[in-house]
Image (cartoon, rainbow, N blue to C red; front, side, top):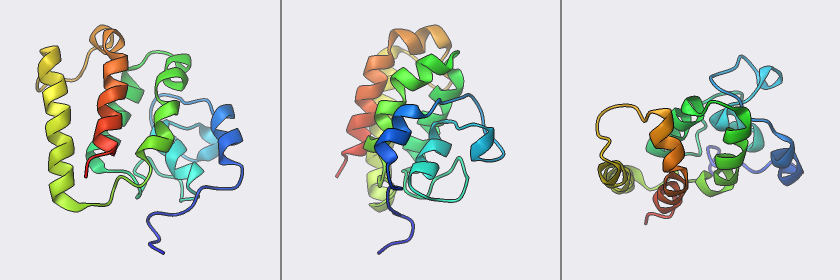
Length: 141
């Protein structure tokens, strides 16, 4: 088995429901969890905000949104459901990453947001479509 894929830790579904996602990076699991740290935790990886099982482009965009949302309640509502979706998206190489990057670029272009960070109001107005584009990026083959 590929060590970077890992396995879900026992009882991950219950743990996922109980997790409270927070802004920023944390020193360890007891200090709090951003969305990417939660992925690593649920996969039994060492504490990191760069889990080995998630596509770099998906990881970057999820982390960006995690830190742009203003409240943990929003992170939990909008990002937690995506955690199981993004697991094991790291695999597939440069070709799949380029396809994912293009899907994200097209989504931002539709919003009229290009090389800048998503501002809070634009993000909240378009959070459902963000969830949709992440799901599409995770399914790229």
